[in-house]
Length: 127
Image 1 (tube, rainbow, N blue to C red):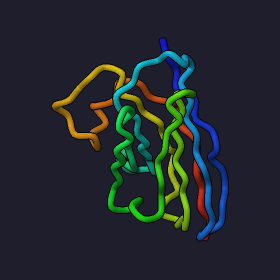
Image 2 (cartoon, rainbow, N blue to C red; image 1 turned 30 degrees about the vertical axis):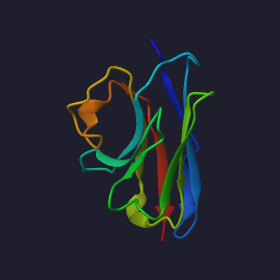
Image 3 (cartoon, rainbow, N blue to C red; image 1 turned 120 degrees about the vertical axis):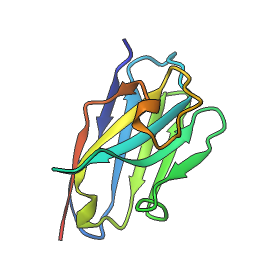
Image 4 (cartoon, rainbow, N blue to C red; image 1 turned 90 degrees about the horizontal axis):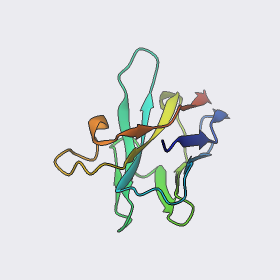
């Protein structure tokens, strides 16, 4: 089965930047949408950003819009999340997700739309 492997998390001061990467274990892996979600301690997993694989259309949550940028490398089956102006409230485990089985009826911000998930990478923003 295809695996998603995230990297790039770490500790950063408020106002700083981090770039997360998520690579699929198979380069011939077919995907419709890839997204990033995050989960802070004691909170539910929430949508951060997503990108459609063919058109490259991007979607953001209200909290990430204007500060985060999602992008993709189709040839490498890799998705990135550039995070700028980080805040302490951005602290969470960030998960990469992929829609490899088409689920058109589900909203792009819904976790159930995605059938593959990475193991998560910790992002900690200190004040």
